[in-house]
Amino acid sequence: MTRTSTSTGTTAAAPRPRADAVRNRERILAAAREVFVEHGSGAPFDEVARRAGVGNATLYRHFPDRATLVHHVVLFVMDRVTAEARRSLTEEPDAFAGLCRFTHTAADERIGALCAMLGGDFDHEHPELISAREQLAEAVEGLLTAGQGAGLIRTDVGVGDLMVALSQLSRPLPGVTCIGVDTFVHRHLQLLLDGLRAPARSVLPGEAATLDDLRQKTV
Image 1 (cartoon, rainbow, N blue to C red):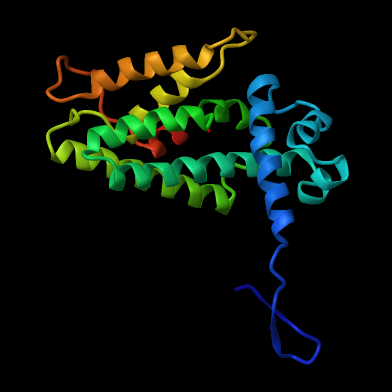
Image 2: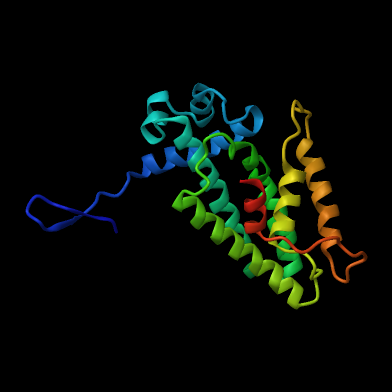
């Protein structure tokens, strides 16, 4: 529990956020994620508030400016995807089944939309983002390592390879609002997953990529 200093020099427990405040924050983040997918991170705050079912004052109380909201949407998506990678490894019958579950769920969490939010003045080196990135890499690495060790996943791919392919295949196409587009995303992701099965049927050029490799090339 978080503690704060009092005027007498003693420490007291900081008040816990109210349950309704926590729910509002989650609703805002989930709504902002969808609005940013559809309209980009420059979408009006009014639309985010409307989609979340809260007033503008509530939105600004949690996220006073656009940079803060974008930052927390990125963390929201990364944290949820990391948690799913860990669950997939422990709950599925084998690591390849876990990889399939993780990949499709990560697409549903809109991880492909993150790239569009990371431009401009986004703080790539914020300690929270670095920590989230490390935890995501560790969780996905666990899935890949387990599958490769069991002979289920080809050994010439790394976390970076999987995540860039996932991001590219699940990223919304500019100007496309066709009904059922998610169906095509999942079809194409399954084609990707079939290509990750061992034994490998081809030789990949270059070397397996990590998330750090991607960051160094794009930041």
